[in-house]
Amino acid sequence: MSAEKKNIADLSAEELYALAREREQEEEDRREQEMKEKLDALKIARKEMLARHRKELSELDRQIRALGGSVPKARAGRTRRRSGSGAGTISQRLCEIVATQPEMTVSEIREQAEGAGIDTKNISQTLAYLKRQGRLASPRRGVYTSA
Image (cartoon, rainbow, N blue to C red):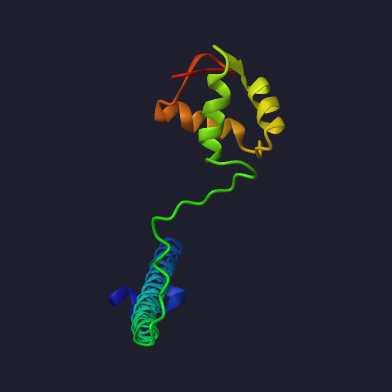
């Protein structure tokens, strides 16, 4: 503390530099503390808003049920299906295509999938997923067989 009470003109360059670093660290700590407090306040506000939302939603659902209506269930757990025409998911349909021949390359699979009206935008990722799931096998790079 005595170093801080000294006249600035009496301090060496090293002491001034040390004071500046100390001040920068204090400012950074203060900024971090302010950010943490703001973040905590926002998290609390979000939690309160979600609680209000759930309460209001359950009250509306209760009123709908009281009038004999049905309430849609939560969306969690539903799977999205983006297949165009035909039945089954894209994964199922790709497995069926690969099963038609002993081995197929990615380009052959893509051609048949396009012919069947399947979106082939992410076919490589889908084939890799099916391979990880054990539904397809890949004896060589870019070649798939039915597992």
